[in-house]
Length: 267
Image 1 (cartoon, helix red, strand yellow):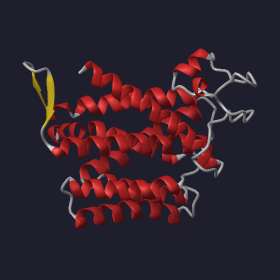
Image 2 (cartoon, rainbow, N blue to C red):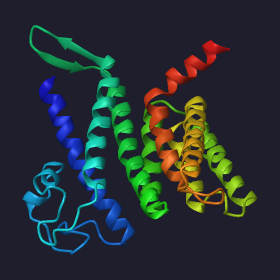
Image 3 (cartoon, helix red, strand yellow):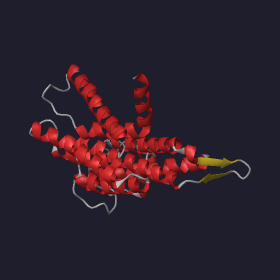
Image 4 (cartoon, rainbow, N blue to C red):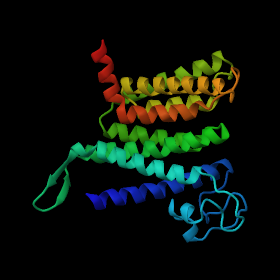
């Protein structure tokens, strides 16, 4: 089990590194192929300067060539993705059966892999959305549309019906579209409508969809009020909603059923 945990951690670190590269190249509208380079001096990086987390620590957070500071985004995204991948791995371990005699782990149901792949994909996609919107106040449809298709396929294999999926997609999209048109684009951006559609493809369960959206708006409200109180924002300032929708999606995936159960116990 320790060996599997280490492999997952290293795999997720690599995906976090790829996510950082993807974010920058999507913003610059560059191809994903080609060698990595320093975004400050554009010098190509050797493999030993591109090892997730370790290279940042070895270089003490500075580019080897221009000596300017490397954004903390890089190690933070890599580490958070690794921790979230491990979290969802252990979350689904109730599907595992451990044979102590032969020291082997046997995974019986296919649903284990489907749920795990869906949740890991969601972590990757919403990490990219979080950082992209936080840095550039933009939502990239080059991420949203392919991810939506993947979530539709995975949820269909997990037993969701076409009708339920179509309904959650339409309702989630309309929820944000109405806000966009009522506020004439001042309340949220067009990209947030597509994020609503993405949430609809990820959550064919109405309860989880509501948890994701409510969590996003609650976190956004508290963060916004906090920034106003400390003088970082004014009442008319905009916040990147995609950041909070990404957080809401992860919260719903991780603790959605527990939140819903706690709510019904209260009433």
